[in-house]
Amino acid sequence: MVVESNSGKYGITIACVLLFGKDNTIMSVLPQYKTDAIFRVENLDRYDNRDVVITNLLDSYERLMEFGKKHLNDLFVLDGIQSISARDRILREIISNILCHRDYSSKYPAKFVIEKGQMYTENSNLSHGIGNLDIKTFSPFPKNPTISKIFREIGLADELGSGMRNTNKYTVLYSEEEPIFSEGDIFRTIIPLKNIATVKVGSDKPPIKTANKNRR
Image 1 (cartoon, rainbow, N blue to C red):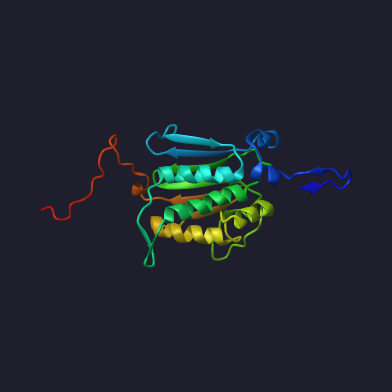
Image 2 (tube, rainbow, N blue to C red):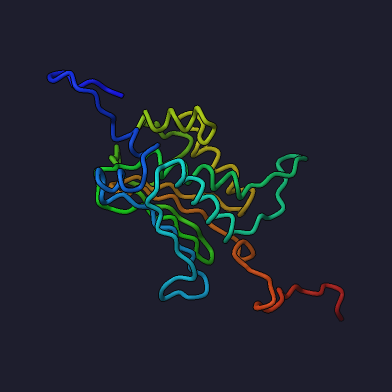
């Protein structure tokens, strides 16, 4: 809740609307707001599954996490001697990033796309440079501090700057390759994926073929 300095009237901030508002309230304030989640592995001309998310940021986080978990396999990963879900930790970081750090005044819709060989996010950005970021030398800059603070307080994000380092760490464990962070008017995070990360096994899918090393 804020007080308008001239009139003394009470009001709410855009951050509050985005975090806790109902869908129709958000649309009345920011009609361009949406996050487009796409899974595209078999149908390359269109998509295999899609979810257009226009609900508040807290509910959006849950919807996007479920979308990612539905379409990405949770591969066996060891961090030292401990088994972890690198998939879930990567999703947590990249989803909280596109929700906390995007430029909500832009008409460019945020995207969360899973494809064969890669997963990427895109969001409008108030950039402070252009080009790929080096996690060893980059300087984090807060974009929406109120939103980021709420996400930290409820455990959906960590301190500023740690998200890129965590994403890099768990991508290396999950995919055995490093992610790409590209700064510009559109901020992009690209996560390389092993083919097995998006393979689906079921009654309508052929079995996964594996090499028989003992065959002569």
